[in-house]
Image (tube, rainbow, N blue to C red; front, side):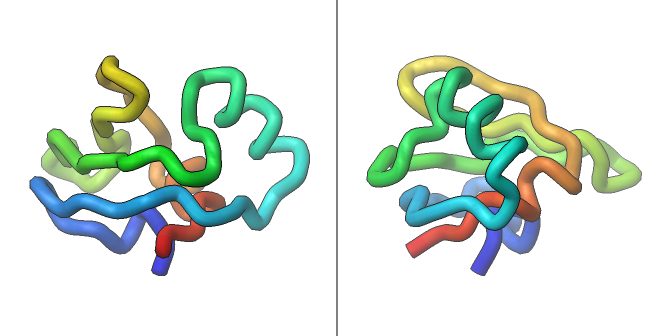
Length: 71
């Protein structure tokens, strides 16, 4: 399952990434493997989504969220 498939309020744990280039950017923002990630809000049209990770809120495009595979 990917982060983009989670509903608002759902919780997951980052397992790995599907895009190497995007993974570097996401890891710099705190989305490290093993981190708990919670979907805080989803925009009315579905893009972007706000997630809580590493103690702060991060806004991601749906494409970026689809590169994060969860446990």
